[in-house]
Length: 319
Image (cartoon, rainbow, N blue to C red; front, side, top):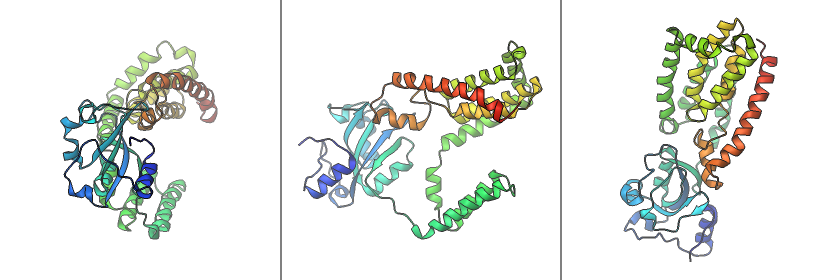
């Protein structure tokens, strides 16, 4: 029988109805004949190195020790021979394999795990301690005992030292691409500020708006940040435009806080494309959306946020 459904339903069918899940091709792998086999649904992540190649070219089973049972693209199950299908960003793969191998997919940058039947063990004995550490981090920062950066680092160290978090799990969950991006972009933003380039950009951008007032300048700065964050990292967009916001405020002789708040808000409004943020990509395939769907909904939503921010930010954080 050829069936389709959610991961948990397929697992229930296998366990209760006595059915076996058979891949398109048979593999002589002893690990798949044991009871330590499970299912997982995962997306091909944005910028994945797997995109454009077929399962055969990738030697998918040899690399990941799992079998691809099905490929779903934009809500439609691909009926062709799976081994010959070039993968695309956002493809949903139904994978079967040893539980240990499936668990490793969570730390692989090429995948975004959507739904897994395998349960993650919880160390409930340390839950109160972990909650206490998080509360202490927030409380010490709120009382201005130490900056949030310091308390957060101390909290992370306390999590590891008390056994609430294992180092290998912490390393696995780090997004090294974001860290490397910030390591390169933040010094660039600082250099732009120190050498005067940010001031020159601000002067050029504001030359025609200087007489229009700080509200008009804030609106343009928000709009520029919002456009950039649709095609690049929100962290990079904020880091690049923060020095410009500060230079702009100095040029106008007003407080920089409303401009920085505008940059922060705008950098977090990636609604108009499916590639601006990972959550957009996750629902792109699962919901069967098209690129144009994000434009139809995201652009009006961005404009609403832009209008509300331009109206409210100066009233909450005055110039």
